[in-house]
Amino acid sequence: MAAVATEVVTPTRMELLKLKHRVNLAQRGHDLLKEKMDALIIEFFEVLRRIGEARKSALKQLSLAYRALSVCSAVMGTIETRQASREAKRELEVEISTRHIMGIVVPTLEVERVERDALTRGYSLHTTPSVLDEVSKEFEKALGLLVKLAELEESARAIARELERTKRRVNALEYILIPRLKAALKFIEMRLDEMERENFSRLKRIKAMLEAGA
Amino acid sequence: MNVDRVLKFELSRLNVHLPERRISLKEALESTKPQVATRDGSIHRFKREELDLLAKTVPEADWGRLHLPILIALDPKLGRGVARITGGAEAKVVGQILGKKSTGEELLIYRPEVAVVRRKLPTTTQYFFVPG
Image 1 (cartoon, rainbow over the protein chains, first blue to last red):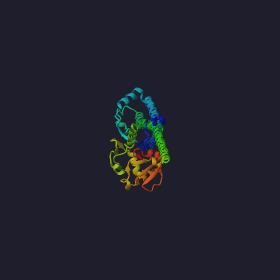
Image 2 (image 1 turned 180 degrees about the horizontal axis):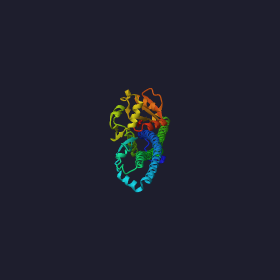
Image 3 (image 1 turned 30 degrees about the vertical axis):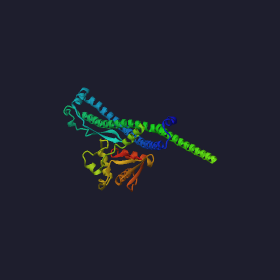
Image 4 (image 1 turned 90 degrees about the vertical axis):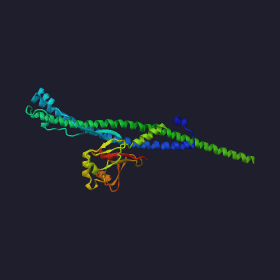
């Protein structure tokens, strides 16, 4: 690694100053990117924790909803339940905006109101039993939870991508760029010291020769 | 030299998520769409429930002094994992959330505390990387 660095540098004071500036910049970049990586890890684990909770409650709610659906199918009959579900049409308005976590754009989903009352669901209240209302209510609750889960999962994906990118940069700085620059810096310093020593001994020799001549 | 350019670009991108102008809690509560425009031109929206939480935590007299998003400044000079909250109202509200006493215009918090603050206020706080 040191060989690569020393092959291209010219051992001058100007180059030494330039290199010192570059080392400072690289070190500053490394420190800041490392801070960013730490912050991303905090965010990532937080999102993972929330995903765990959201998934657990969504699964619990879905299980309740499917159980209610089984009861409803038993009471109403499968064909009638399916018919009622076809009648109950809806458009769910989801407002998708964004929020930023250190430059990563993550979606924020806001749903106005997922749960409806029995009158607005669309199926006939005269021909359907109350168990159908129960099923609808449970599935509507599950839908709200699934929207929340989708938001969190997309956030986790975006954070993971950025984390990978940042880690690659931090590693490149830590293990390649900074050591190379430091090696080049050391090489120039040693070369300059060597040149100074050569100069000193040359001057001493000249002085000795002049004194011998006099 | 290309590497330096990439690094400079990377450093310049660190704070693009910060808002062009911060808004006060009062403005955010009065707005139908509480949001700020960020430096890269996109929109950052505050969640209503967080604004309500802040409104409950902060006395009404301070609503105009609390600027959103609250900036969690990460400065490598402070050491790894240390963050700084500046501003009297901001430091006070973060202190209250963490159960810490904040007296001045500044509050220093540590990594586990940053996680707690971010958990409670994910949209009304933002990281700010302090260039050296």
